[in-house]
Length: 386
Length: 222
Ligand SMILES: [Zn+2]
Image (cartoon, rainbow over the protein chains, first blue to last red):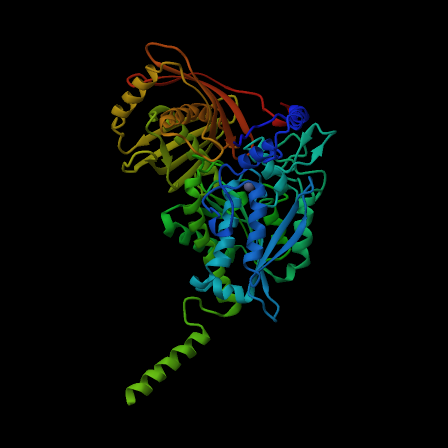
């Protein structure tokens, strides 16, 4: 007869002793039941085994996103490299993907970051969705396929990882990072007020207790320094800089720190309006497009303004769904439609870049397709002659 | 009087205040209105009084399939910030009381609760609201309309974020709910705790007995 028993750790030695004394054979089946229970609780919402079963219509805690990052890297070595961007204040590693076809010629760069504000979970879900779009579906999308030839997508799936973790464990509506200030009496910097761009002049606070605390100096935060360093080092190649947020359904152009238009305002407005129109075609969601200081509010130290002044032709902030009904706690049921419509908007921007910079009219036949087509027509004619 | 861009924030924020007021007055546990894009906007600066916005847009019931209702509104923000904004609105058609049956069902269910309702975190952190809590949530949004309207300035844009806690009082002639809400101000980005005490019944409609902004909470200092 075999009997299974669970023994409290405090009684372990006593039980073992009396079993040995009475000459009863035994074996330890599970060393630490609590550890097993804890582990299964973490995975309670979704059991993540392989990339193919990853659920893109759910929000994921950071440990699952780290696993997913690894899986994406391993599954697409031909298309993707995983790179270290830097460390968060709490020493978590921040990664970014470079996604594109290998090429001998110098490629341009399309930047996208998600999760700079902790509570904006849909932003993180979107980056994951969009990365899958690039690595798994490029074959069915001409625009993306062409772009991957000429452009490397640099994508940071979660920038403010400390804040994101805190929004899962402690405060769902946390916005900032988690660096301590004033003898640990207050925590966190609004990373999108910390960039070195008219820092802390308007729409930001120098009080650490404020939710828009700008930090102790321009780029005082490790997360912001990491972005500034990488982006500055490749600045001559960046065509477009996107930063993904929620909520409000807006495509924001520079500037936040002044009401004056940026150098490339007109072209940015045209491209932004086209993106919003394409987005609305998917399920009717209405976006407003315009400069931040005119359609939302004035703010300083944002990554969008900072990127604009580095000279990139396009620099947009996306504020995803919704209009305030659910706000940051956008239901998981809306992840899919939000990501589909946002992908359509971004593909329209990429299409514009393809046409403008690489002289490829997307949707038309590419050169090789023309040759293939002419060749098959010739074969057709050849056979019909006989 | 000056024409202003209808999609810029002075116009959209004022339109939001008008919709808050409409939801307080016309919202029910089963009916809430949402604003469509502002189509025209003018700003009138009244010396010594304040700024008045004249706006046109449509509203749409966000819960029930109903036609859009075009409306014109006037929102006057007083220069003296102690005065709450004046809101006047004019609807092209007045909506019928098409949620009467559902409202009555909800009322009966709540008044027959064996134990008074106590609930927390609606929606939950994944945005989920159970079907039986939807009317409780909608009523909170309608009631929050009053607090949002009364506290609005040209430097605010409020949205009801979640019900932290709701408690039903034991009553016999109207449903009474005490809500602890979180309201997000988009302009300051703060999430503000707000206590709102509500009385509602299908014939008498919605009354807010008290509404009070509470001091900021900090999870680090709990
Ligand atoms: Zn944000």
